Image (cartoon, helix red, strand yellow):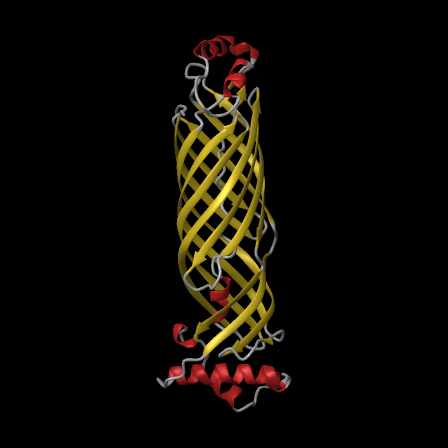
Amino acid sequence: MKFIIYALGLSFLVGTVYGQAGAGMKIANNQKHYLDSIQRVGYPYRFPIWGRKAVYKGFDIQYPVGVMLNLNAGRQDVTINNLEVGFNGNGLVPMDFIKFGKVRTTMQGLTSRIDLWLLPFLDLYAIVGLVHAKTNVSIVSPFQFTSEAKFKGNTFGLGTTIAGGYHGIVTITDINYTWTHLDKLDEPVKALMVTPRLGYNYSFKKHRERAITCWIGTTGFYVNKGTVGSISLSDLGPNMSQEQIDKILSEGEAWYQALDPGQKLVVKEITKAIKDKIDGLPNDLQVDYSLEKNPTSHWSMLVGMQYQFNKRWQVRSELGFLGGRSSFLLSGNYRWRW
């Protein structure tokens, strides 16, 4: 059943929180000198729309355009349901007798993001990048089996951030949708992430453009749960013992006897093809599959921090945890006026 891990691919780690952490901040009354200085300069730029009004109303807004480079890694525990398997296009057969143990996907990615603050509180962005992943699957019944497969691919996404700040308190809600194409899947993995955060922004008194922002939040992660595809047996390594193969082919296993005719045919054909591969005989069986997968929980927690050197340069880190999911993000951001 090693083909199952190809079906899972990067399904639960393509989603990463890419939203801009900064937001327009209402300047406190005790910072009147700084407020007067930015109001004297004015805001003669195209974006964000209403930027000039925001400045005159006492908001300190960041530069509207930015490019971010992200390094991210993580893992996600997965549940599998409604597995169906066939071969050589002869139709799919339910394989509900297979019971899964721990299924886990891990990922490393390098992405870049360009964004634009369209309004003082609304940021729009696009993401492109490369991903590498591996999936570990264990079957606990009716036979024991563990295996691992590696993947690579590219990802593209669109997102928006709604953010605001008042006297140091910041709220940031990020929504993004990504499409990830992997080398072992017929269709892209589609993922939606919703991430509300609440935090605090501390500005240095002697360097008002320098700031530290810390936050806590939660991440909702939703992925297209249906996966359909096919893979040639030649792409899979032998993954059953000779003893197990012989028992299935001789129809001596009790669990095999309990299967319906369609299930027996699929199991036997795949087992024969695996045996031929071990023996070095040609048998390029095409394995077709369909399954549903879900994260063990759609929601997890996160904490994060951003250090702003000035309005052009920021670095940022986030850590996700709970809900069967863990993730780490490190990014650098450069911004400019437009």
